[in-house]
Image (cartoon, rainbow over all chains, first blue to last red):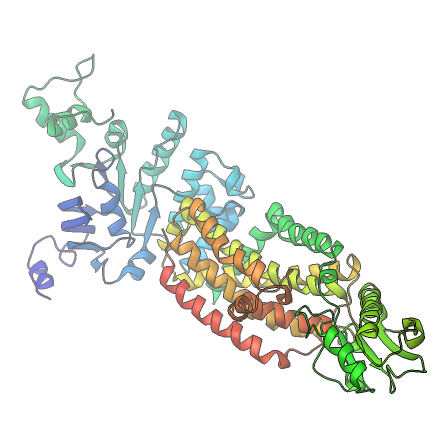
Length: 268
Length: 372
């Protein structure tokens, strides 16, 4: 295929770059009249947490769900470990970990049963207790899903995403709706996953979350990536232009970056 | 194979833990069966009485045509075609008709008193009593219209009715309604069970999460359908036992293999309705649209498929359409097996009908299925 040939001549193609796990090029996706993703490109490396920061409806979830094999793309290319997600959806699904935005499991199954069931679906013989221990849910192994708190449900979804020892992990707004304490726990958990070497891509509309967790942040607005760098570089660039902070203490944050780039505040 | 197994085990666990669903699956049809068993819809219909005319004279012909309603159009008896006494007596024992009346030779001739014998199924005593009353009134009328009976004769001196009771298999309306409700419950449990499970799981996002794993829809749906079939078999057994011990109906008299032969019938019927449920769940976006859609499909069948309303009280042109409905096929086969102890193999026509419906529903289900 023409596009494949063209791709292999470029320097950062999956086959030429050892540590790129997720590769997206000029991705486009529309629903009827609405342009959800309008030609975005990025790459996520091994052992990196890559954040997509943007308001609701910016195209974050659409992008992630295309990579997860849940949606078709209109045009562009998306690869995971060098596999085209549109042509190898089953193989791609088998090697990634997924936490959906609206995550849910069977109400009447307990946590051990849930992890075991999903392990079977991924053809993995992982030990359910061990996986639950990783997300600090070992003591709830016999509780049914419906009895969990919001934070526990999110941690279970991480556990389930880990059963197949994935090369890439997709977390779609992992802390939305959680209380501050549960959010901190979740951050610790995600931070710990980075050390396992997988590429982690998360979406969020929390500035602080992106600043705390992400090695690199793509600011996405109206289906376009308007900036893509480390949080510090984004802030420093803004600082060098002499911008003012919205905060009383005058310290520039990602929020100021966002306002500067899009002309509006992220959290209404 | 491991994946199928894992889903079947998970589904079974979930179903057994959902006590409320388990309860309602059985409670609702049980209540329906018991309540309908109290009614006697059979009383509104003309009794089914075979007629053997051994006299074959003017008087007997007038009597028979009055009973058949050939004068004013309203039949007083529902008269089967056969006129052979042996066949009709066998039909009573099988429970197919309520009784047989034999008009003796020399009926209506002056100077003697003819005795009309009415042999009836002891289980249908009410219907037989109604038949005797009708017969007595008709004889009075016939007596007055038949010209060559002298006017001084009283009807009692001319003809009387004698009753003979035999033990047949007629089970009246109860016998009709128990297999009907059993069939109805298979439809309701299969169709609504699938619709609500799938719509809820889809709205919660569970199906989407399954879609994110490397499985195919059939991996998940096979477990769901398998569990539902087990439930349908269990539910049918429980409801038939309720029919036996609460409604006092005899189930498949003298043919114990029924309890095994009914399983393929349950699975064939249940699979079709489950597939229909799958199709509905794919078409409906939310629980709010799924319920009316499922009701539009099931309600007409509830009333037109001969479940608790006999086809004999429904206009012929409606029956001509209703006999092709899947629930009609299921209820007909179920009733024949439960009431008369017929075997599964002689239900060929109904089974073929169910098979065609299952195939149609399966195609619809495959087209309509959505993960999200």
